[in-house]
Amino acid sequence: MPARTLSRPHPATPGGVDIRLPWWALALPALAFLVLLGLILNPSDAHAASGDPAVARVVEHAQHLLAR
Image 1 (cartoon, rainbow, N blue to C red):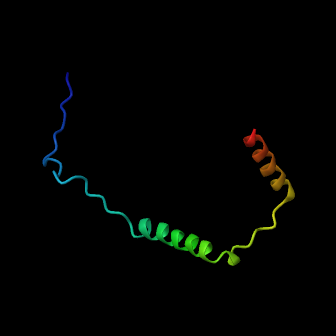
Image 2 (spheres, rainbow, N blue to C red; image 1 turned 90 degrees about the vertical axis):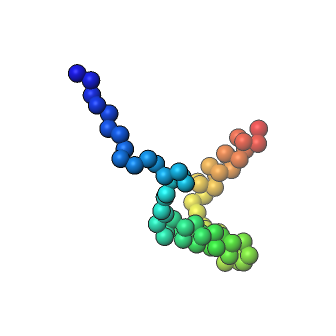
Image 3 (cartoon, rainbow, N blue to C red; image 1 turned 180 degrees about the vertical axis):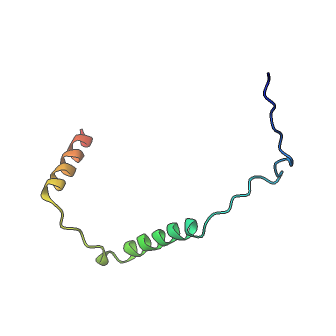
């Protein structure tokens, strides 16, 4: 017995897809952009983290491998 296919009662809107973004979908990237722009304009506020020396060695090793 064949299955019936359901048809939509109204056709899709011809103007395209209507998608509504939440407020934070635009606010968070804008905020991140402004923070990064502020760090670029005033680099004295961007202090380097005193990390583990092992991490620095891994990064140096990766740079050495990529330079080959």
